[in-house]
Image 1 (cartoon, rainbow, N blue to C red):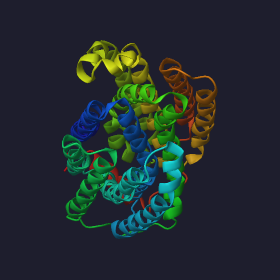
Image 2: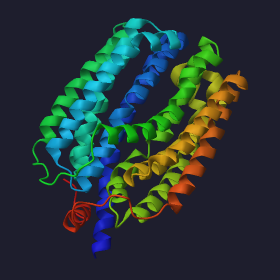
Image 3: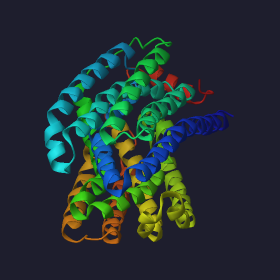
Length: 417
């Protein structure tokens, strides 16, 4: 009976988080399509490159969320974890300010537009802390609301600006403002619950940095192709590639709820191994469906965004395959953070180096570029996934007390808030 209840709770949690994630993702895809149509290939190439750079700098937000969620499962204090979030936000804000000019020079984008893109990163870090608290507590209903609101808050202001003729810089500025507003609202929502009373030692910015290098490897693998497309290909081809990469994002983020919901169980020593096996199996299945869907939907591309993007029509399934591989890699790397075995990221970093080298030396067309990227992602996902499955079951650090670990496991068997 307990197992059946736990399974029902997991499915319910995935459903709720999927609804929130899908709201955010659909909004993002809508923004990508509208930006591609309104800005044209060259303008959209700049917009996509800056969005990819923004995602890389926002890596600490993803890392902070996973660290906070893990520490809540293991008995961490909510107030201390919020202070950690504030410190990380300040660090990212300073880093963003320092990187504006170098990033603009590297990507060949305007300084103003680049500053607007990077401005969103510290807002996302602050939001990540609140999402981690909700995730660790198993409050998937509230988390779903925050995820959906974050997507809409980031996208709708940008769409409004683009609709009245604004460029990439103005749209990205509006997006930053919307994200900041959602972060403030999330703090109020999360604050309805009291924090933990037990605080574990050894959790600070260093813990976030270790998780960040894992997330950075994943995000770099998922975005470096779009950024380097402007270097390897011409402006028009880079814009075409950026649109094809939307299929990669769909396949990558479609199963995001799997990792979000199963992550607390990955962090619980009792159920870690089973949760990792379940996560990777589900991700492979969803990936297969995404690739098939991309192949079926490919003929609609010219009708939706125009004949300028027709060259990527026959390659859409390859872009989706790349996203499916990245989704499996994400699940494996999340298990590494949950078990505090972030050394697994070394494999991803090696794969990234090889991929970049091949992109710069072998690829000169859209087809060659996406083939190199998909093949690299597939090899890395298979290697890291295999290592995650054979990893020891027990993490090096345990919860403060058996009561804490047991309590969190029981929460996961209840209906999410």
